Image (tube, rainbow, N blue to C red; front, side, top):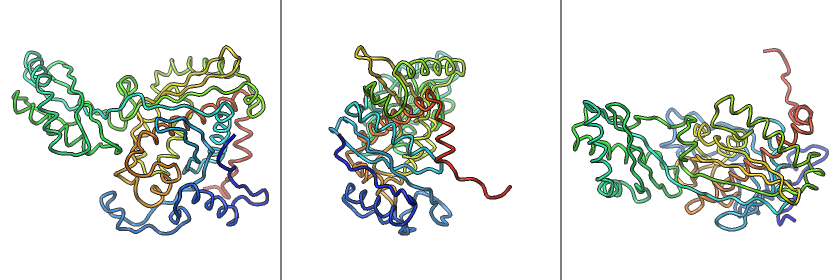
Length: 393
């Protein structure tokens, strides 16, 4: 059973001021603070300094809550409402249903299994021999480069240096820990310093800080090696709950997941999840993250199988979650309030935030796949996503 109350709803008009006020009051109790910006209070324009140029105001996107979501995280058991900013009708309802399915089995378990933000500068030499020699110099200098990085930041550390040779070019893979921030600017500055020092030592002809640019693009390297925080979320969902809440069996879900895998193999995609981009975009936007990283974040794997007891085992693996709870826009306006609702505002919470995101993705994929099996997908969108244009445009 959930320790959190059900989200208040109004049968007569769920968009009436009273219905919104009831839900906000619930969230304020959970967050332990007022949520004035979520309620519409203007944000101080000065808070955007350093985040945007030519400021004219702040965009507004509808914000809803899904849940409760129950997750065994590295920081302990968490039960939260998940804020989601979206204009897609039926999305919040779908994720909420998935969260109920996870809760029926006691909730999800999620863990950050790997952490490290990679940067990939490239240096150009006269030929293969020079590139190989430069690679040897780079590997021998790893500790020196780590000390160089330490002079530029109190939060980031160079924890790994790897090299690869592409013709006359030397590719560096520099992996940093970044504390509770995404840390892109810190890592880029550090990569620039390291590559400049290596270029000086090895007489490189050219040097590019983003020589192999994995930034904000889906790529096989990040899918394999991970980038940012790599998360695995899993759950066992009882057969009875699937039948009652989703009108589907574990066997049907295993079958449809195998069919999706066949289609994904032909596509050659790194994203073998079903609707990760939907849930991630909604939560990243609500929580002040850099939404452009969605292209990397949404990569991953979905796995269903029937347990020996006849229930459903489900897992979602997301190798490249680039998120933070400090820095960027995470501590301002509605973003700070939404992170507070999750219990993830400020330092010390980035891994928990990533683990909650992994469980959210699992809930959404479980619900969507069930709707496909029960042939309820279109009907749900017709019923809940009724925002029709009023005229031809």
